[in-house]
Image 1 (tube, rainbow, N blue to C red):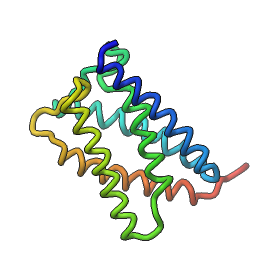
Image 2 (spheres, rainbow, N blue to C red):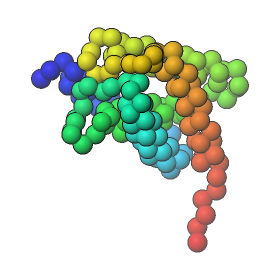
Image 3 (tube, rainbow, N blue to C red):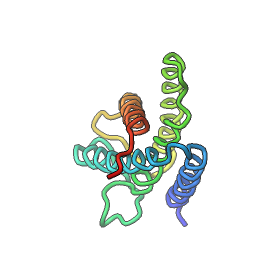
Length: 159
C-alpha cells in the first residue's frame, strides 16, 4: 500500500474515533452535533470543490478519484470530526475562546502543513499558502461554533 493511502486510512480511522468520542462526550447535545457534522460535510465538499476549480489546491491521493475531485476522507470524515471536536471543548469565557481558537487553528495548520510538504496528498497552487488556510479555518470554525450555539439552544418543536 502506498504511503499516501496509508495516510488516508489513518485519518479515516482517526476521524471515526473522534466522532465516536465526541458523541459520547456531548451526549446532551447529540442532535446539534449530528446536524453540525452534516453541515460541515456539505461545507467542506463545496469549499474544496471551489478551491480545486479555482486552482488553489489539489488532492492528489483520493478514494474514488473518477467520482470525487476532493478528498472524501477529509470532506466527509476528518473536517466534520474536527468541527464537532472543536465546538465540544469550546471554553465559556471570550478570552479563552479566542485563545482556544487560535491554538486550534495553529494545530490544524501545522498538521496540514506537514501533510502538504511530506506527502503527495495535498498541494497548494496559485499563491495559496498555509497563512490563507489559517485565516479561512479561523473564520470557518467560528461560523460553525455560531451554528452550534444556535442549534443547541433552539427548542425542538413537536407536532
